[in-house]
Image (tube, rainbow, N blue to C red):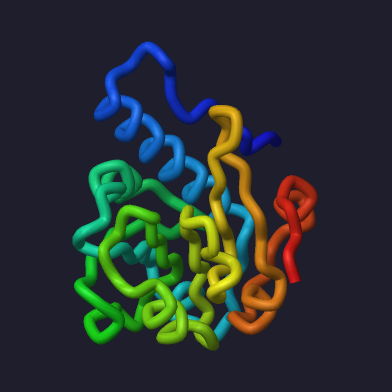
Length: 170
């Protein structure tokens, strides 16, 4: 299963291209979630829903909202927005922060660093500052890298199938 997807068309306007790129990234977040398992004692494993949290200011919001109600591991996806690390919900299973979000990424990531939260972002240094999955757009394709140390610290299980498709970072 390939995750490299075309991010946008050269013939679309800049706004359409951004919306298309966000839709592709949201779809990839959904697909990645299917290849991750959370510890049995986590809220992600013990509730009927899988919560994706993202900053209120993040322009990927509408694309992520389209995932609401879809299921992963038999759990319906819920989308929650937050202002900063102080207002971040404790039941986040996935935390997405795009490079366009206007907040301090290191502070938010350190808030969930030892929690069973799959952190996904698309800024160039996302894995370097402790994020687990870093999405990259190269040659109109979205690729991803996985920070194995951050994943281990969070206690997440990542499928070997997904690891084969990713660039692995330690």
